[in-house]
Amino acid sequence: MDLEKAMQFMLDMQAKHEAWLHAHNQAVVRLDEQIARVEKIAESNATRIGQLMDVSSSLAHHGEETDRRFDETNQKIRGLADAQSRTDEKPNALVDMVDKLVKRNSSALSNRPLCEAVSIW
Image 1: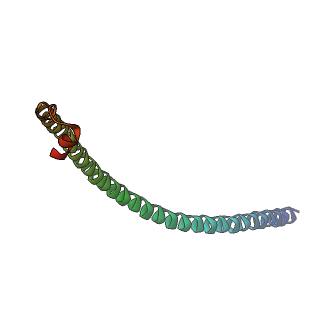
Image 2: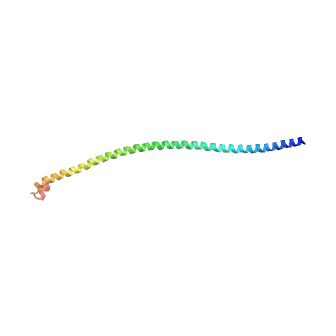
Image 3: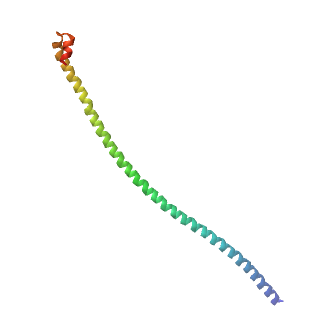
């Protein structure tokens, strides 16, 4: 009887071991599938990270170019403002000169008729 019990114990243990081994193999298959999915995601992420780095580099370059262009534009605006201030002075000087001429000649023209005064100009 002890031999039968020992044999039955060994058969039970072998059945339990086979069930455990089967469950373990199924878990390994699922893990292999999950690892394959994670590897695929990692490859995709690596590709996307490379693309993001390229875009980031391009944006940095464009930002530097934009800054350079803003600097050039600001210099041109300062030049235009300077030219405008000099241009504004010229009409004022012209008005002053005409005003002086009119005042100087007004006394000379006051004794003449209007048609003679106009012909002087």
